[in-house]
Image 1: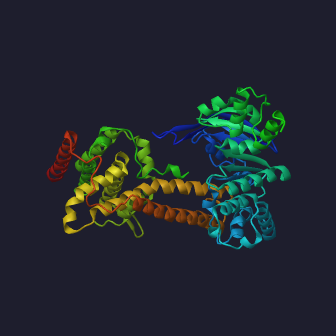
Image 2: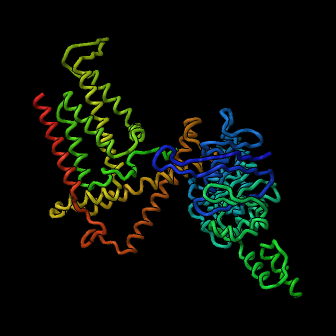
Image 3: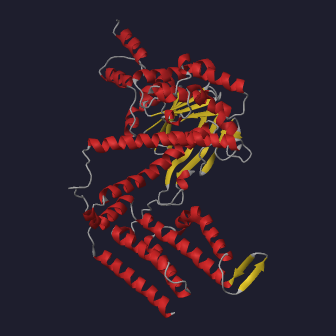
Length: 282
Length: 267
């Protein structure tokens, strides 16, 4: 079950001189409870693809099935879909508009026609999940720091209690601390709530750490999909399409080339430290 | 969604019209508009139609694209037609019902008025389809330069205009993004009760205003950082110069206008 993308095509400005094929024959399956990283260079079609997943863009051809139902069918409720599949845009802090943090978070759930109590509960719960302290909930969102604003924006989607959450470059432009915060929020949503998460990014270091599976895109096509360790074997090919693998992979490969017998498939710094300690008996 | 707005958007086809000096195109648009308001006769309007069609074909802008650009003013055109139809006095009455009277003169006037508005719209949008905003403001600045002597800040006017034009696509893109982001939170300006629609509208307008103001202030800083100090003493990378084809363009314009006047007087 969950999301199936079937032979999806999309064109911008169809029928004019600006026409551009943005997505070509996209096929993928995203299973319940999976943490998928979508990786690609700027302009590879990542953002265009995810905007199809909650029905914001209509494909030129192909279909998307959510839990077995075609989301572009006439009778299918896009409003219901957008509740279940939450989409956090790039730089989501620019969409904040309310006078207080809590009111902004409430915007989503109150559009769903829930009772006031349910809206309040869902909103407080979401704010707690992203780690915004209680004394900030009545502050103006415009007074917060960049990282905090982004957390509020993510809470705005979480408050709708989605089953799947899609995030477009959620750490772009944040400092290391803010980035770490966001990634650990995602990790805990995945582990503790069993939420399906789709993380769009152009940084391998970032997704390698959190995703179960990677989908690599280039020029509107999916070029590879698999577990991070699998994907990172092809670091030459990845570099050709403007992507780099995590620094750790380069280090381990260099060690190997120099005749040091380290194991394959290590990409995260903690594992690397352990492996190097093992080899050198430190 | 909003990407469908074509009004005022440049359409790159590299045609002969695109390569004309912007001043020629500006003059042509003005002369064409004046010509539409000279005589209400069949020969004059036929010539105006043919002239417009030829320029349209030469510009290689798809016809459909131009029709799409007319959409926002369709209501205005129809309204003008209806007004003229019912409220023109004189002539023979063709149809009468209570207070409403339609005269043959009214019908004639309504048709001319609707055609005139439509041609005016197509003519002026052809200017923006075939001229980039930068060329256009360069053209205006150069054409109005003599006014500098009577202390009109021509350069500043041109700059303000080019900035405004430059920001239209940026703000459209921004609005498109915010609309989608709020739609992802269930905010929909197209359906639901009046109150929820108004609220969804607010959720789009506020972020849009904030970002517009922020962009304006960023731009001001960026200009300051590059020591921008207005028009005096600035030179251009690509100075505007008339070529053979521009003189030819002016000639065609003159002949067209003379033909319109002659047709109007003689027939």
